[in-house]
Amino acid sequence: MTVFRKALTSIIILFSICMFIIINSKAEASEGFKKDQVAGTKYICYTKEAIMRLSFYDVNNKIESIATARALVSAGVCEYYPQGLLIKVREVIHEYTDYNKLVVQVLSCVNPESTREDSPIVYIAAYKQLATDLPLFDKDKKEEKPDGLKV
Image (cartoon, rainbow, N blue to C red; front, side, top):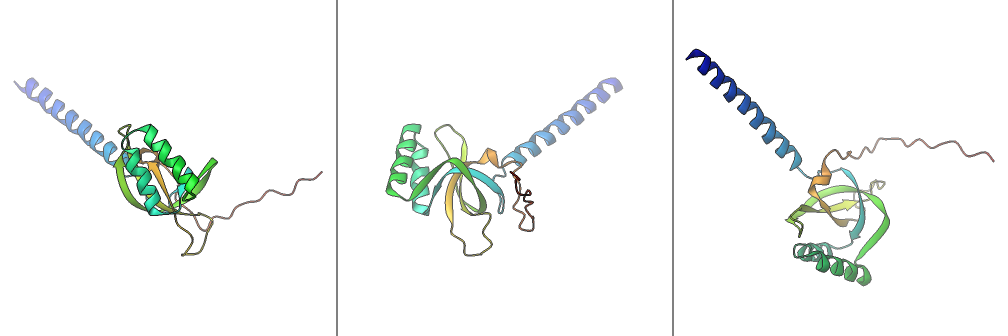
């Protein structure tokens, strides 16, 4: 009887530890973007209305999402950067699930190089799962520039 009791106690403890690990890993993965994180993007919008329109069509299917993105770029309210660019997150505006059943966050962002508080704001949509382990913006970081090339 005591062997059975010890085995049952061990199983309960092991189960509790496993559940603790699972709960903590899910909570960590679901945090999303935070203020002052630096992230990369290829697509930005200049107005909140434009990014919300894109997110509305992104819920339905890929074709509508791509068509809307192209229409917004041609209207001049959004831009596409094939090389990508770095942005600094200011806040999370909205969160939704896209056509692939992935959680997407709509973010307001600024240029990380800007030191002004009133710097222009752009809006992006990014997958929430990409927010893990992104660096925070360090305004005191001194960029080391290499010595000039000698020819």
